[in-house]
Amino acid sequence: MGVQPTFFLLMALVLASCKPGTEQAIQTEQITFTKEGELSIWEGETTKIKADFDIEFAESPYETGTGLMYRASMEENQGMLFIFPEVAVHNFYMKNTEFSLDILFIDRDQKIVSLGKNTVPFDEGGISSQYPIKYVLEINGGLSDRLGLGVGDSISFSRKPSALDFP
Image (cartoon, rainbow, N blue to C red; front, side, top):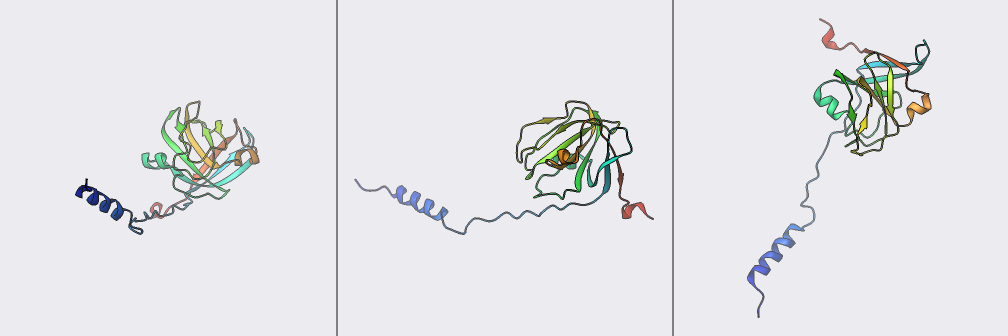
């Protein structure tokens, strides 16, 4: 019995598809931090500031859905503040997030009500606010413990004026 001609055709296709250098690299643009405002964290009801951050805002559905995904890192004095249109229990995950975060869940009165600490990069498991919230602050993992941030602390924030704000 001889070798079937289809065998040779199949082998030629397999070998052709294995040629080195035929893959195309997908280039992604590095996303960088853009300071859009400032945020302070206050000890409980006191006037003592525990921490100050430069922040980016996440408000649109795209921004809140993407958050800090596709970024390699963030400086210690930087964070992302999510502002939701409704007060509700919200869930977060670390899909496509390359570095650990502390997630501070904040109610409508700007008080921290729960924290998700030292999240695991790329983990798609849910991290629940456990309580109805209006805001979330994401900072580098482990930072809330180093700064002594916790439930009952409060925040205040301001937006950086943009060129659109001036006539």
